Length: 529
Image 1 (cartoon, rainbow, N blue to C red):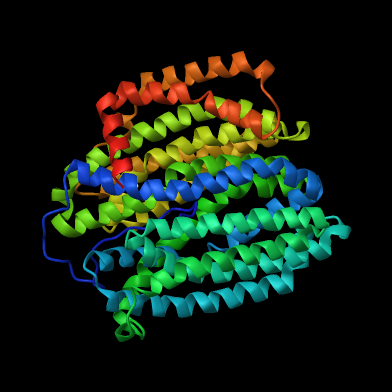
Image 2 (image 1 turned 135 degrees about the horizontal axis):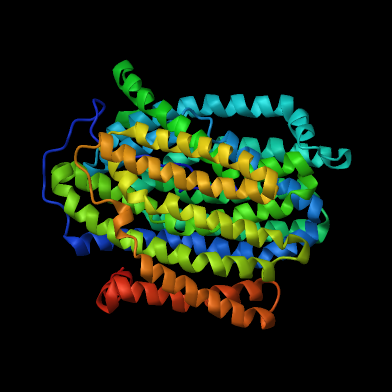
């Protein structure tokens, strides 16, 4: 799938720069309950947009593999990875724009929002034309690099060019999505994503039943993005004004791009690190045979994206608090937010690793069994990338954009070094383990970096990790998986069974950390929305 908001890459922040003056201090909205309400409400809508597509993908993946065949499915995953990588070469503009849209939304400055969107849209449009033209000219060489068999080149080339053009349009649409997100209209983005995935499911069903191959996949992707655009863009336009039509000043543009280039480097490093395993596998064993590695990587990324649905609400909450009362005044609320985040992410990954290992093996055909090993290793590494999110967002909100850049670069370098070292004894699984080690190294470096450069710091996130509760939850899940594995069904039902077995361990961790009252308060907040 082509990424929507939120994307897998490092995200942006809000803060006070020469582009916008700081708003006068006002009392923050609500206390701890207000923070939780914002987070849970936004996360609930975002989670809906993640879980519905997740159910569709999990249910249809075995059918798609059989319908397209192993070779075409592997090519499909590879081309999706390539286009995701290309989408990061936008100069950091799309993600940097979110920084300012959020602060503008906090003071309802529609003129500034429109002026910035108009300016960056022109640059994004030029970039889209450039990358599409480049792919048209070099598509065959790109495919040959991954040892694509000649009989698959025509339809693979068509899919690659089509998805590149779709990504170019999607980068523009994501600017409007960022405006919508900054206004806390998460339900609109959720509706767009869900509707798009319904089209995706129907399109792939028609493609397989009619034997359209990768041509049908390309057409499906076009229709999916058209539907999403028709839902989200009109809502974003409502928060714009004709008075803002025009370009930002040269000084404003200089400040914006000085920030954006740092996001660009971090984004490229992050996407290379997350997609490296699929690319390496395709290069070594050919695109047609890389399906299990791509599927394992994608499954781990899908599990990572589930908690990342809270990123936009976290971003909005941190930005609003810092903009309203300053860093010192916002710190207590953000620390409470971080505690809830760390507990939930720890539980998700602690029970997710054993559940993923057994579930993926039960879900996919026997030839894809190694995808379970890959997904579980990567999910263990993703824990480190997730647990630091609030702390990193806090640092970015205070203007330290280079922190995310340095974290991504260190993570990529450690990834490469560890992958090379582990390749010799363990082969491609060693390369996968290197990715997990790189993520951990990047997070540890970021933790040190924050303590070095951020003046107003929140509590260290690793101190809030419930270690013994996580061990108990993982152990309980592992025992349940081992007991049920011999009798677990195959296909989507097998994956569902293994996933449900993770529930008791997750509940155990939540109840022993947040407590019954904390869990009830969170559920009450969801119901009231």
